[in-house]
Image (cartoon, rainbow, N blue to C red; front, top):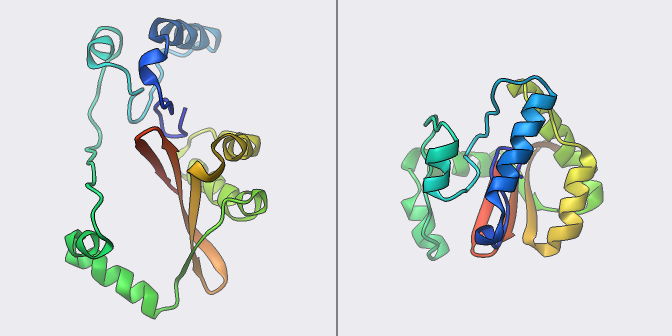
Length: 168
């Protein structure tokens, strides 16, 4: 599962959804929970979702057609482009690093802070280390650094033809 919901799989059609449902039902009963909130859904077939889950729309999602960097940049809202240019002028530095050291020193502390802020129990550091081992170069983490301090991170996984992003 991605931290904000959904199954990360390059072959979702091979998953045994009834087994997943049974597991989740047992987990709820074991912990005395009345319901399980899964943000972004499970990525299950629509028919299965309709029969087995109550769907509540909290957010809208969009797919981005990947084009040239220039076309993508021009398609970004003017206010966002303005903010990015201001960040560049102010010396915000962006870098990529998915090393174990960077996950421990930069990513995980931001992740914990984000989970605490939202009141969500965090997954362990070892989860991200295992993801790094499994996904290898298909796991990317980009950081924004201000005055030598990492202030934001964007984590992404590539699975098949999909890219899953988590903003921290």
